Image (cartoon, rainbow, N blue to C red; front, side, top):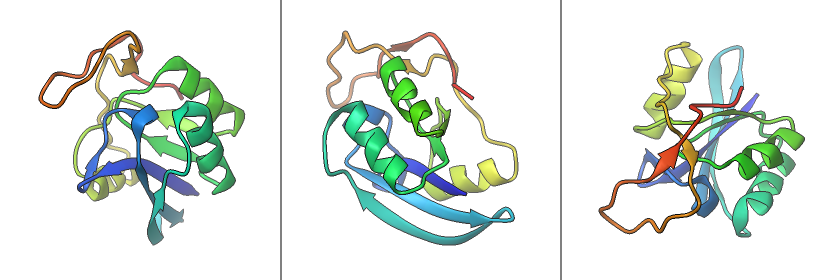
Length: 129
C-alpha cells in the first residue's frame, strides 16, 4: 500500500487542491517500509489525482477536499480520508493503528478565498471511503 498525505512543514496541509508536496509512505503488513516527499508538478485536483495515481497511491489522508477532487482520485482507485489534521508521521501511525480521527465538514467550499490566518471554510461530508 502507498499512503499519501498533503504536506507542509511537517503537518497535514489543509487544502488538497493547493498542495505543493505530498509525503508518501510505502506500507507493508502495517509497517512503514519507506517514505519520501513528492513535489507537485501541476495544478488543480485533476493534475494532483494523476500525479498520485501514477505513483501507485492507494490511500490519501488529507484535510479539506472538494467533490471534484474526490471523484478524480476515485477514478484512480484511491481511498480518501478527509478532515485529517496534525503532524504527518503521527497521523500515519494513527491510521495504521486504526485510530485516525477525521473532522466533520471536510469538503472544501471553492466559493471562498482562504488567506493566511483565516479559518478554512468547508462544508458537508467528513470523508469519502
